[in-house]
Amino acid sequence: MSVAPLHLAVALQDAGWHPAAWREPGARPRELFDAGYWADAVAEAERGLLDFVTFEDSLALQSASPFVPDERTDQVRGRLDAVLTAARVAPLTRGIGLVPTLVSTHTEPFHLSKAIATLDHVSSGRAGLRVQIAAQPHISGHFGRRVLPPLPVEDFNAPQVQELIAEHFDEAADYVEVLRRLWDSWEDDAEIRDAATGRFVDRGKLHYIDFEGRRFSVRGPSITPRPPQGQPLVTALAHATVPFRLVARSADVGFVTPADAAHAAEIVAEICREQQDAGRAGETVHVFGDLLVFLEETAPAAEARRQRLDTLLDAPHTSDARIFTGTPAGLADLLLDLRDAGLTGFRLRPADADRDLRAISRGLVPELQSRGVFRRSYEAPTLRGLLGLPRPANRYATACPGETDTP
Image (cartoon, rainbow, N blue to C red; front, side):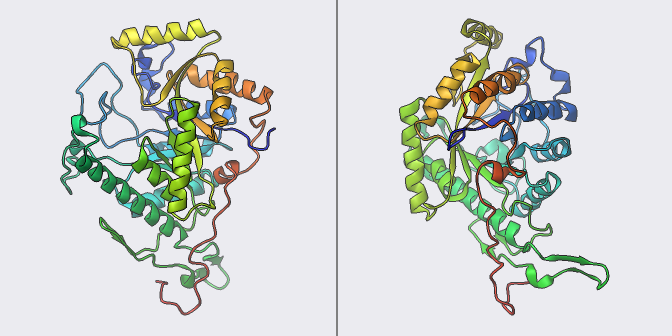
């Protein structure tokens, strides 16, 4: 295997990332809200020794538009909670990472910190999260705690609109900071569990975090002991400078959508500059390329399936990510080309959650293994270990006895 092995993840969504995939003969639309459906998908990804899977989620029904509901009834609508789905699947898996999506804009970081810490405990150190913002007014209407102005698509690049977006991403950065502090609010050896002496916990090793931000203040400590990884994996999807800055400031992995190798190199360079500005130049931040994939034994067969699904959709499906249509060998060529531009891994979006996921685990992975660029077994028991990331030291563990940060 090469010095820098290629990392691979899969994004799980509905019946697949093509909106008409649920109508394919082999699809399982009646099972989309059954735990077994998701367990089968993750088992297939684990068969391919993938680093992790992500679970899509949101606080509103799916829509063909990212900004407004579309009221369509001919596409999949409704989904299970991503964190709960990951927790259900965790005991059925042994090596693969589990990364549900969390929406920071309308949820409390205290609640989500213990949810992800719990996922890390029940998976023995394979948990992560994808932080996502939700700036749409129709989503804020579900909660009634804040009124968000509309983001006009036609003026999306206007300074005042970009300023609003930057505020949401700054809030997301604060959110992640609270998560990280809460995960550290218990030192690793805070639990004594000594029945003979009657001491279960050392209260001197539980710490207030005393976070004060624009949108929330959190005192802590958490009610959940420090996760096995110390810090579960934090990921974010980024398309432009403002979200690139969130990746550089707060994440362990950023998902990006380059059009080609030159674009990938530009993105990696920009994230590196933002890392330096954030004081994280010495830390590893993986940059994964997102691609939506149609995979068949021949390129014409893949193209024919894509056209068939587009016909069901009555329009060509477009995506924020590059769409690859072809063979596993052709996709391997593309991934290695993009890796040479600086990407350290890839998150693949199966157009068909069944067919294309199997093509990834049983076609692409053996192809990459034959080229010596992908693992043949899980070489670490934790998700951070799979990605070559160290287990972070607890930021509060060096506090001197007698300091007043303990509850």
